[in-house]
Amino acid sequence: MTRSAVQDERLVHVPLGDRAYDILIGPGLIARAGGEITSRIKGRKAAIVTDENVAPLYLEPLTDALQTDGIEVASLILPAGEKTKSLDHLAAVCDMALAARVERNDAIIALGGGVIGDLAGFAAGIVRRGVRFVQMPTSLLSQVDSSVGGKTGINSRHGKNLLGVFHQPDLVLADTDTLNTLSEREFRAGYAEVAKYGLIDKPDFFDWLEKNWQDVFSGGPSRAQAIAISCQAKSDVVVEDEFENGRRALLNLGHTFGHALEAATQYDSSRLVHGEGVAIGMALAYRFSSRLNLASPDDAERVEAHLKAVGLPTRISDIPGDALPVERLMDAIAQDKKVKSGKLTFILTRGIGESFVADDVAASEVLTFLEQQPAR
Image 1 (cartoon, rainbow, N blue to C red):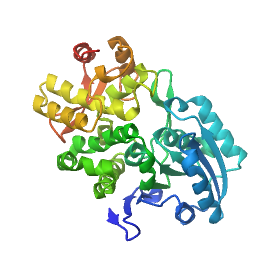
Image 2 (tube, rainbow, N blue to C red):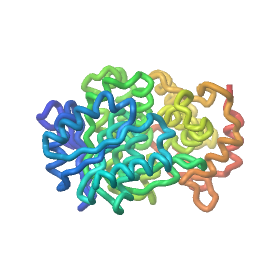
Image 3 (cartoon, helix red, strand yellow):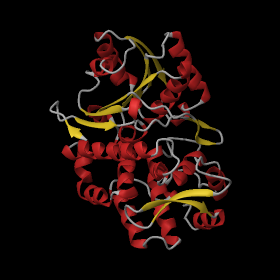
């Protein structure tokens, strides 16, 4: 990881051989997008996928920037929210790209948060059996997590992200100016993924976040530093295990519980967004690890205290609306992609920064644990 002289910009390089790519982090990157893209991609057409929240803010500036550098632009504006990750919207993105005559050296650009990135990336992976792909994440969550690593996908009625492909981006442009337009709730949700990297295997980073999270939230120097450290952490894991056959599974800390909560709430963002599900999921993973005598209850309390301090939910009872039946949560957990041969796989922990893959967790243990969690 290096620092550029250009407006306090950070660069993280993901060394994947002939599929290597750069992650640029800093202000003003939307205005510079044309030059950054044309220096890396031969094609001169781009199909931009965005949503109705992001489009009024950034679609026109991005279109202007691309056209200034000679890139022909088509665009599609989709509804905002998790429900957009569907087969119908995937078809719409593919149709738009094909109608724009996007070829294999041209790019599909994801301008938005994790939903748009996952959906557009899936389309980029299957249109003409694979076209170039540029991630332009506009939320904290997507800048530190979903835009990096090549996992794409949409949701099924059976669960989250069950349809998808691995398709690495050719470039990630994380314009930190876009974070200034996020709601407090969206920023907090993204912060859950930042904290996750400390809890997986970087206890010093978690210590640093406990001391500096307010500067991260206020947009001080710690913000770009936290994003860069998070991207570097994910890059390191992806390079070691690109297709999630081993260590990359650690990035799912909190996600088995979190995805089940999202599915059980039917992806209703008024009740729960992804980062909130991850926050509750991480707190549950630490409490579950404590229940199994793997970790100290003090660690679980410390994790919960930090997540609460930044305003994130930590318990199932924090989710508004009707109580979630345990049976519905267990059904969703059973559909998780990490289930192998019917055995439940969880990311558990022996302490702060000591996460590991537990691939033979008894369903009865999970059921008993969830039954003990207050529904209200």
